[in-house]
Image 1 (cartoon, helix red, strand yellow):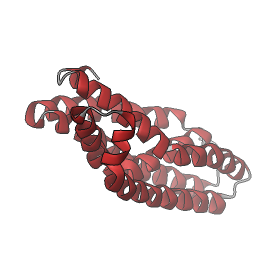
Image 2 (cartoon, rainbow, N blue to C red):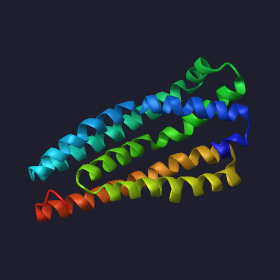
Image 3 (cartoon, rainbow, N blue to C red):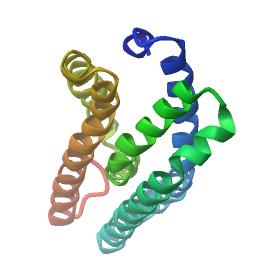
Image 4 (cartoon, rainbow, N blue to C red):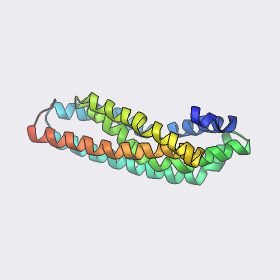
Length: 190
């Protein structure tokens, strides 16, 4: 937000609106996360890792498909949707810019959310926390600073998307590794 504020009040207003639209677009993945976590925990406790793996696979597929659907939808309706929130052309332009850049990451952001929830119920909360810290402090902040210098406001927006893409891929492989180890040992806990 501090970096965005350097581009004026219209940019800050647009960023606020765009992130609220983003939260609405991703609410379905958040609901899935709420359901998936107890299902995984229960089946891991019962040492039914076949069901855990299946749930993770289906959850990840859904997150990727939902992310793709939101990408297309928001790309098509970015300007009209932005106009519902503000009639200032500068604000509308910046909301649309955000909605054309950041949703590219929504599928992998969903993977990150589902993977961190899964890791937490598999008694790996430090792994989940590490992934989130990496996403914010190792990826997003440095990329936003770099994006600001190189590309301006689009670079800041792109940094958010890039950080979720990288962290989502990392979360996928991290959780996969944990599931393979659990399946081999048959353990429900670390």
